[in-house]
Structures are given as C-alpha cells and as structure tokens.
Image 1 (tube, rainbow, N blue to C red):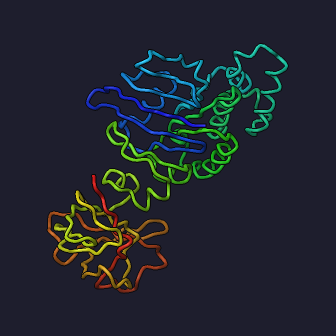
Image 2 (tube, one colour; image 1 turned 90 degrees about the vertical axis):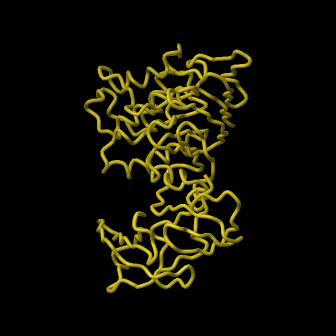
Amino acid sequence: MSLLVDIRKQLGAFTLDVKFEAENGVTCLLGASGCGKSYTLKCIAGIEKPDRGHIELDGTVLFDSDRHIDLPPQKRRVGYLFQNYALFPNMTVRQNILCGLHGEKDRNLKERKLREMLRTMQLDGLENHRPAQLSGGQQQRVALARILVNEPRLLMLDEPFSALDAHLRDSLKIELRDMLQKFGKEVLMVTHSREEAYNMSRKIAVMDRGKLLTVKDTKELFANPGSIAAATLTGCKNIAEAKKTGDYEVEIPTWGIRLQTAEQVQDGLAAVGIRAHYFNPSTKQNRYPVCYTEEMEEPFEVILQFRYADQRAESPPIWWRLPKDRKPQAFPAELGVAPANILLLYE
C-alpha cells in the first residue's frame, strides 16, 4: 500500500510544492506553523483543491489535474483527525462514533462495529457521555473511533496532541502509537514538534515555506539533517555559516576555527551544525579554548553557553548541554567535538 502526492498550490505569499511517497507506517510532516503542512492534508482529503498535480492512494487516483479527476471527500476513504477533534458537542460518544457509519444500512452490523470500536478504544461505559464530560485523551479516542470505524485506507492526524494538556501528552503518545501500529496502513501526521515526530514516526518529511525539503528515516534525519532548515527543526542549537577548505575540513569564520569532518565535504556547503550535547572535554579532535558566558538550569540538564577565543563579537554564544550529574566542578578550558558529530548543511 502506498500514497503518492505531487501537488502545487499558490497560497498567498508562497507556493505549496510538495512531492513525496508514503508507505505502511507513520510518516510525519514536520515544519513550522504556516509552512503548508495542514493544507497538504486537506488537499489529500479533498477538502482543498490543488492548482495542479496528482494524488494516488493504493492505485486509486484521488486527484489528477491533467485528467480532470477530483474525487469528493466521501469517496476517498481517507480519515482525517482535526486538531480540535471536531466532535459534535450535543451528541453522546455512541452517537459521535455512529456518525462514522452513516452509510451503513445494516443495523446489526452497525451495532457490532460500534461495540468493537468501543472495546478497542477503551471507551466501554462512556457510551452516553458527551464530549464535555470526557478527558482530553478520551475525546481523542472518540474522534479516532469515529474515523476508524469506517475502515479508512489512509489515516491523517493534524497536530493530534495540540489540544491536550502538557502532562497528558507523554502517556498518550505511547497509547496513540500502539493504536496506529494496529491500524496497519499508511498514517500521515502533521506536527511542529520534533519530539512528537521522533517518537511517533518511521519517516519524517521536512517542510519549509511550502516546500518539501527532504524525506528520510527518522533516525537518519536527526543524525544527518542535510539542510539548515532541517537542522533547525530537529533542534540543532549551534548553526553557523561555513566554507569548504578541504575534502574533510571546513572553516567557520564567525567562530574563528576550522573543523575536521568524518563525512566528505561537498561543493555548495552553506553551514555546519553541532548539536548542544556533542561537545566533550575529553575529545582530542576539533579541540579549542573556550570562554563561558552563561549558565542555564533545566529540571534535569544544565546548559552552558560559551564562546571560542577568536569568535566574532556579533555572533551568538554556543550551547553545550549536559546532564546535571555530569556537570564538572570546574569548567574545562577547552572543548572538543568528534568529526562524526559535525553536521554538514547545504541549503
């Protein structure tokens, strides 16, 4: 089973230009707010219409501008979970879920599917509750039940945790991830949270201002984001312009240093990134004197900001993040970073 998307749409100040393929499992669309992630889902669902392009799900063409194909939403068999879940407030849990079976005429079959879904979603005993009487997690399960009871070929989740309190999100991530694995088909999830993308997905598609920059396996993306936008979205705190000075060497003018790399440097290098936890006082390579400027404490980690000896005054300080129990008694005068931990960024 697969989803093919190749669409373009003029959206005010930028053009949505998205091309990717998703297969069984969860693919996250990761990007900042307003970059076109949710609009992409709406085009796939048939809620919005691209200017041109092609959308195909498991061999069925949902949209093709050249062939004048544009299936209505109800014929696409695509399940779409909105950010606020879009439950009907005056309906009970039972009534909300049955809305997903409005096309089923067999009453016995409808009742059986309802009971199965209540059991699967752990909603037994809540059939007569209204949404306002449910917790955020229960509301999410009802919304999912209403979608899944209709057996969609594709499930799309638009910021599924945004309506939840922060303390609920971690436990519900595990719960939702287990449900999606049982679904067994393609899942597209929109998020601007790198933690959610990392925890929930098999692949991540990075979007920036309407453009899809890259699609990579989740762990590969975090290990080698490849572009400035992808590095920023995956949480890299230390990014600076760089230029190639050798096959395995780069210069960072604003930091006043040169770094050896494990990966061969290609032409067109734009910048380098170093994640805040990559610095190590015992690493001998790429080792330079540093001057500490600020200390910030988090619940379980500490962030030390520093500057290199020849770093330009206008450039921001560099972040070194480490667990509290590894905070040194005396701050080391020099820090190193392994060549394998230098991220080469080309866009």
